[in-house]
Image (tube, rainbow, N blue to C red; front, side, top):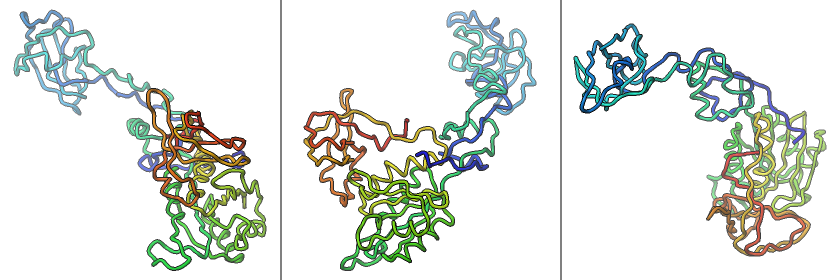
Length: 396
């Protein structure tokens, strides 16, 4: 992750900034709320004149006006008076308490108060939410719907955020056909293009689209060069292993890419590669659909989040009790698709079924990946395993 850097800040309309990360501190130029206002529909009164109210001895006050939200506070409440006030309306001069309408007879020219209020009841004070000059949000803060609302209340129509990475997807293989094409012998539909595009969007990045390239060294080289012209990140699926028709590694070397790693002792996804080409990250993912999705989840997604300025890059982890035996060979770390459930304060993990790297249905069942260390060859039912909770937002 040391090679990955946040992208430059861009100015963005507030309406388009959801799920992006602030690139600046936000200070309030005005208090929120901007004036004292009523938190209830009721009557604005002087506390001193209403504190002795009871059911048996109601206090009666003269209603001198109505005050709706959006009106100015031109009125003044004197002793023995009240103003009918709506939620959000400014507190009139002289009033220091709002009696909610349920505690009155809701009278017209005169109102009877049946319950004694407390001083300051039902008044939202100016600045009680946000004070003028207060630092409301810091740089690197993720913008969720709540933050969008706060920024709107502050009048921030535009703000600086870290840019979303533009991601181009390149799928390699003579066997690939489009999802609308008729099936033919030796062909498979290009599901990786769609699962990866969806993962890119789910991470908050911008998926530019995808292209398919046949198994040819020159075509592969050209497709890589073209793919990086408008993208910040290139993801390549297939062609990264050592087969006779795997040309990605050769093409990257010819283009002068700086290889950071190639092959990882894991399953699924051993033929995983990462390069920098022209300073831009290029991920080479295996072609098997599960391997592609798992490698994106574990490697590409954190990189995209870092490029967007996120502070938290990795999914929550938990210790879970495995509910069935799992056997594997040593020397490779396994990412096992599991269904994680919380019961009685503990996590339990069940296998989604067969763990082949072509069983894409398993990804629709899983909400976690159990991480089985390379040196472990057997996990018994009832043993604890570390799981990555892949449906929860990152927390570290």
